[in-house]
Length: 261
Ligand code: SF4
Figure (spheres, rainbow, N blue to C red):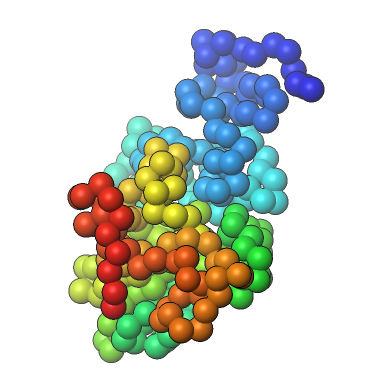
């Protein structure tokens, strides 16, 4: 049953800056015109889906559930109008990632010697998941993306960056920043996701930085882990349904283009 019968108009919300609490949906202080679905909160781990430049953590009125914990957060979240350019630059460097862990040198998470970032928080909850400790969006620890970049920069022997989890697309902004930085360092990037590539396409507008992360990913390993399809014979994958995809070609051609290492 709806807890509230009156749904304020957009104008009323703008004037009062109150939150509309109609059923599950929550609006964000007149800054948002599209109502996030529960699924969106769960799958993205983000509540706010403003433009890429504006994340209003401090204005956030939605108290996230444990599941929908706001995982990709900034210490300071200004809009261009609020802060000067110099202050903004500092704030951007404070983008935080919530991690389960980092392996600085791995030979099992893709070809070559790889720096692996395990994001904390996963909405998929696959049965038989090997990393169940990464599911909880409230656990793990926070680390500034800039510090992860510094660690990445330190090792000249690396051949690539692997973004794993957890669900990297639940923290797409941090993942994108790291992938972009890896490319600047001439490293290749692999991103694991429990979503299907087709699902990610559908979520382009719902997940901030989803498209950017895909474009900064050289290899996408997609799909949930399915226990019944578990295999030890496929490299870098846990179950047969998971695909190794070239996301850039796939985006270009509009169909999934698989590849191999
Ligand atoms: S997507 Fe990966 S981390 Fe998430 S539950 Fe499935 S196997 Fe585990």
